[in-house]
Length: 221
Length: 376
Image (cartoon, rainbow over the protein chains, first blue to last red):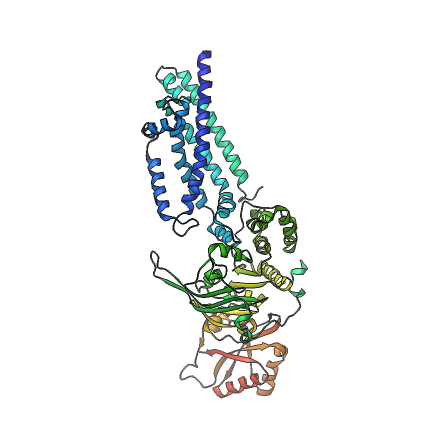
């Protein structure tokens, strides 16, 4: 393998990590609060707002059901508005983030719904405000679940990032398609796949370890 | 652990006649409260409470006992505003909590501790941090939290567990954490929602001892709900029996045990040792002598010994003075609200006149008796 190709792989790895990291960061910053809201705004719940809950739920579902590659091209005008351009790695972060928000929101919602409602009642009986309940009870108790949710999000984002080659986003997936497939360079393809496997394995095992450390429900040996 | 033992408690005569409880005396006064839950999927409107009046006097242990679905859960949740009554007043320390805003309720709730059947500890927090939670919520500084919690953790006997997580504790230890947590804000009232129902009998005993010690030493008023008469017997001064959303009987714990009137009370008492009739007899028990049988049928009688008469040798007198042959079917001697209390279930053959004679004999000696039935 020539040094040029090796450099391409290193650069593509950097682009993938860049896109995934930024999209995960912004996506979580927006998705976690949205997930908390979805989990607590149903009828008779902490922030009861059944109408807003239904609307946001529908928007989340719509985004989730749009195939990612279609989302990428469909929101090009919005991407241009936000990133100033519709091509390149920075531009690719916009659709990645938009796909991440509802993904994170649904996973966080599920984690929070796992928290024993008795704990919410207990906090209410102590005179906790709704925000204190979210912060000290719901998010604290759901932390292992949310950690796993974010791990899953990172892994999915690596998969999604392979598709943003369509708007010149670069990254490992794009490299694999253009060099490995279109130029018949199976060695490039093999290296790309190996790098992706290593990335995903590393993220998954780090996430698992972190979640285990947060989880105090199981009696430690 | 001897400080938790029942035998270390002084015998107190805490049974106050229910009639003396003028409403103004109560730390908690529930006045003519009804609660109806609106119809939901699959069921119509449910009336959980139906014109309930209840007073929990300052410094007392008041128990609400009833079967599941009787409305006791709803009733206790009215006191800290977790439920709002459909009508009526819920006055806690002079404030009608039913009329408070959420913000007003939050302030009141910080002066009311609550413990739960399933403990409701945060799994992500250590013993120390669980006890700290209500103080964090109240905005108490970290340093003051440390100063307040340490004696509380000592009080409930968990000093060596303060950095443990709930998953590492036994049920009884978890409830002790729950109690320490409920006391953290120095409340004037403690609500107990079936606090011992998930515990084994021995642990129940030690948790109840802890509660009655807290009631005595800190002067804390306790309002508890339970379905176990055992709990009432151990710690309650006053009892209200609830059934179908109504209070069907109320009085001192001693009166409820020695002279239960309502059917529900009797059913709830049936599980207490010495109160029940052995199965082989119960199966043959009839309310009236079988028609056409001999007039002198076998009668099953429950005799209740209370106070000074608890130690009288009454059965031997029955035999000596009335020439009666008595079979003993069951019995127990116990202590309720610190007063000695015994029951004896006996059977003997007697015609109606003879039975009246026996009961009069018992009555003269200050013992109450109840005909449980006739053996067919």
